[in-house]
Image 1 (cartoon, rainbow, N blue to C red):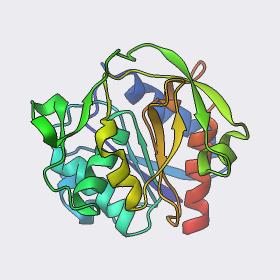
Image 2: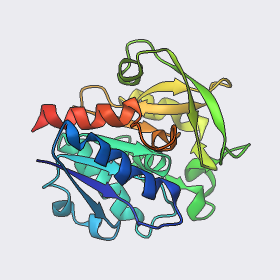
Image 3: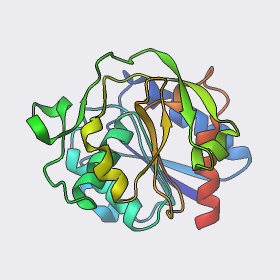
Length: 228
C-alpha cells in the first residue's frame, strides 16, 4: 500500500481538489494507493508527513499556513520523499528552496502582501487563470521523459509566477528549470539527484476530462513504487 499526502486546505470550490482524488483513484488498478488530505496547519509538524511515500502540494492558495506548505516541501526534499507541486505548490516549492538552500531567507510571495525586492513570487503580467498554453521542455529532463515529447500544451489557473530577477540564484544552487512558455517564462522546475522532485506552474490535474491521469501524475505514482 502506497500512502500519498495531499497537502492543502481542501475546498469544493477548488476544481483541482475534486479532480485529484478521482484521478488517483483510477490508478488503483495498477497499485494500492491510500490517499490522505493533510491541511497545511497540520503539515507544520514534519512528523505528519514522514509516514507517507509521496507528497503532493496541491493548488489552492493562499494557504491557511504558509509554514505548513513550506514544511511539506522541506520534508520531502530533505528526506528523499517523492514530491509533486502544482500551481501554488510550484510557487511555494520555489520559496522553500530559496529560503532553505539559497540563503534568501526573506523570500516572499506577493499574494500574501507586498514585500518589495524580497518577492520571489510575483503577479504575472498577464493572468493565466483558465488559459491553455504551450510549454517547451528541456531535453533529457525528468518532465520530457515523462511526457515523451519536447513540447506540450497545458492548462493553468494562476496569477503568480517566478520573478526572473532571482532565477540565477535558484539555478546556481541546483534547481533546474526545465519548462518554459513561448516567451521564455519558467513553467517547470525539478531537482536533479532527488528520487522525484517536480514542480509545475500549470495544473496537470486539469488536463482532459478528468478520467485519464496526466503522465506527470502517473510518473509521480510510479516514483513512489521505486522508493518504498
